[in-house]
Image (cartoon, helix red, strand yellow):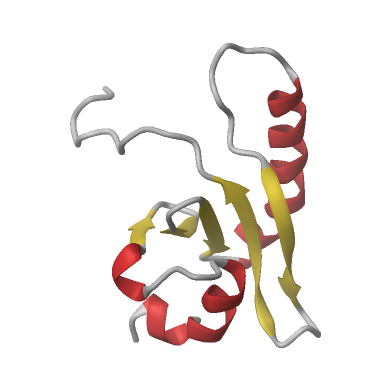
Length: 106
């Protein structure tokens, strides 16, 4: 099943006003990432990745507080998980840029 269909209700709440055609889905080793116009939703692909979400959010908060000279995605909301009826998720602000092309990094 397509990730946008599978999590349609959750994504419509987390990415208000975004239409499916406005969303891009990227798959990494640990997360599915749904990119909206101004927010990004990270959905962990494994239980281990889900347990790392709070730590990832904490690191991003620290980095965002430093004046690094570049924009860092800022955690906006996290939730879901056992007992909530929703998958674990982390919502981040969207930093400008484009995905790296395959082969750019060694």
